[in-house]
Length: 297
View 1: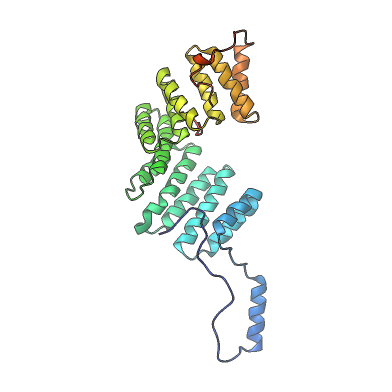
View 2 (view 1 turned 120 degrees about the vertical axis):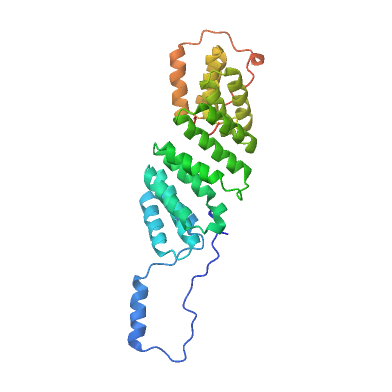
């Protein structure tokens, strides 16, 4: 089975092990030496890990490595992994259309009998399409991934359902998104991001009680995620609990002062103005300040 996660490839690279009964002619030997000087260096044992390491240091170098690797790939696994690396780097550089194309090529490289190995790549392609403002193709990718029955990784399927919910929300299909999130919570009960998305969708639907329950679960799973704290404050403020909202937003600023969420929290607090209220009774704060991890729908 083709494995697309960063694991070491079982491959041996070394000198020519063929033996000859007669030594080659000197001119041929010299040609081989000249060719060796210009030949591309062998790939490392873990080319995907090497590719991503180079990309972290310099995206341009990482892209060159991925494309060179792809040009030299001779097996479905190598092509799929090279395209995976290429897609990830393109996503990081903001070329989401190019990333979707690379992930699609990676999926196409995988034999039909090993299609379960392509599910993570389908999800990557869907997220690239969604980031590129193309929810229709994103849904196609997510639905295609979820249709692979042999892929039985429940938490991963739950994450795909959550991504599918985000795509549905962008198309105004909130009821379908709520159904997808219910399935995501069933499949991935330990995924704080799933509960953050659920809280946000419930809050947008004016179900503040449901939103509070989801955000408390998210905070229990990941109490330091600033996105959770930010959403918790919004829910508290809409429910009329200004003190709890302030505490939640202040916790975001304290735990992740340089984050985007902290900047948003500062903006919310400035809208509220100076805090003239009495200290909050902890008994009245059931966890709204405990800062979820995925982007909101």
